[in-house]
Length: 463
Ligand code: HEM
Image (cartoon, rainbow, N blue to C red; front, side, top):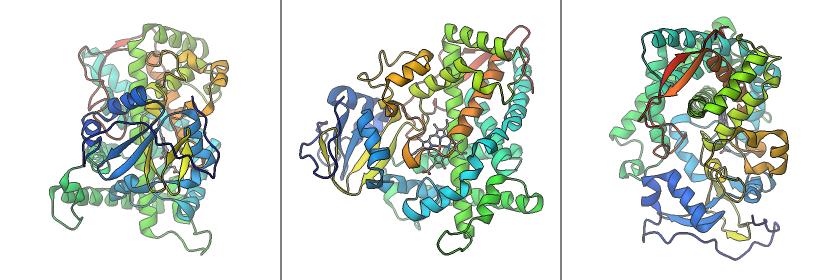
């Protein structure tokens, strides 16, 4: 691992990297398989590499030192930048896509919805939604039918999030919204097609799709607000309705409220669903992990659903989740733009250039992780964690821009894992497609992930 140079005098050394093709740089191999391409960059050029992506200079930074500098020590120098701008087409301007004063005001306003007490209050919602899913799974198991984890987890996290933060029952709309979210994800990540460069007023198929989906989102947000004004339910809606600009004292505009609710809705459910898929799949694929997990859950819960006081005692369950987020971090890549020149790992980062951080690539960095491709929850015992630099592991980002929903996600994942494991043994369906890399945003296990359900003797874990 190389160390980061001092702040002001930036280094002049240019980082190593692929030559690429004139005019395109590394766009073609990147587009073919982004995750594998970036893993190859780390393997071939080290922890800091430089490439051209069309007209842009882009660095990939994977060492814990560089990640700490970008997310914490010099975070003011690294703004969301041009790659995040694509997100605005769907989400508008919310926490994910803004910087500076606007971001600070919004973060402060929504933070109470994610405080410890508020998060604990959602436990009954997660248990209820998971119990309902397990009842459906019982019918599938009796009929000998496999289930698709992607569809199941998307529905589960959407229902939980809507109930917990928006006070809204979204069950009847989940199939439509899954399709709209899938389409939005395609839009948010540039593929380099000509249609992406055309102005928004042009009636291209892409622009029509963006408009159609925007109308659907607008309708959902407006229904959520209407329901809130009738019932007073939905902590996040209340915070957004009551929010005031800290300097002017003005309430948020309708657009601000819409964009923030939509941002949290989109950032919150697809990520947690993806994490849950990989977590359940990893347990299904590693018998010794499953047995250890079953042992801990029988000892602590003995078949019942977890209560608030059980959650901190489920140590092995936590380690399984953390290891699965190491190998399969749902937000596997995120960009920044450097405002001014900087130095990372002794190399020059020019102001105005773009930078990629990738939990996926850093979490498989052989300079930090022994046998990085192996699934091993014991990497997350407290003593093993202490031996690693903190920024070797960052599935939720870090510094002031750390994921606002990380505690909520971890709580959901723990309850889902405990309840599913106590009731069923999952078996991956042979030949199913679980490789990653096609998706440019969240590390989705392709579009489906099928598993067979085997009952566990005496298992119950209903709410
Ligand atoms: C396993 C699940 C999740 C993962 C892996 C995840 C990951 C991340 C990461 C890596 C970031 C930082 C992005 C960056 O700095 O560019 C982030 C930010 C964010 N996440 Fe999550 N997230 C998850 C769940 C959630 C949930 C449940 C919510 C809300 C209900 C949420 C809301 C947000 C928001 C609003 C931001 C922007 C925060 C800011 O910039 O102030 N996320 N998330």
